[in-house]
Image (cartoon, rainbow, N blue to C red; front, top):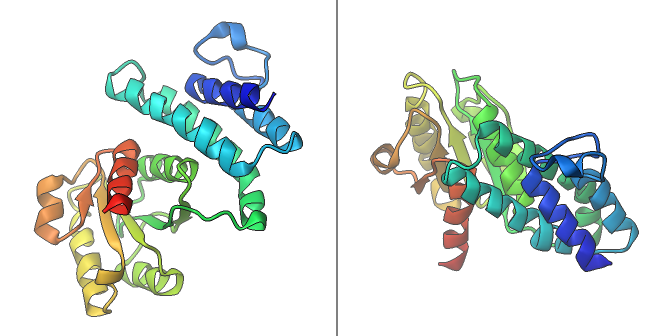
Length: 227
């Protein structure tokens, strides 16, 4: 029964079905339980939260990532799957906290000052939650002072910075310099992303990595943990 539920959760993540009202890619699933209902059923059947994440949510999103990279899925498909995982994680969060299940690390994420675009950032945040990271999203238009304060207070292992505009990407350099000035740079790995930035720019400003999307961010983090 447990294995069957986990398989169904994984399949519905791939289908992008958050609830029974969602049609998904396979129309024959319409009206059947989605990721949210299946996750609640798994919890009722005493399936552990970490099993749901490790055996269903994460592998489901990995397949979505593969399909997206092969252009079999498009942004709306990816968003639907990410939204389904986000809903499941909202249900699992209090259980994870109660059972003291260790996360893979704390990740602070923000869109830099002057930039209010948040779709890409939000997708990355959801994917990271689904992969088992504790995500602290401090929103858009985040100044270097605000980011430094959060890094000092939360002591995360990772910081993700997003910028869509070429006019705001320079804020990433400002933030990294502010971290150095406050003796925090060596305590946190900085990942940058967004349409305006690149591998070359990451090297130029001294960031640890450039990530084209949330799936690449997860791969980068896995490498960091393996090192």
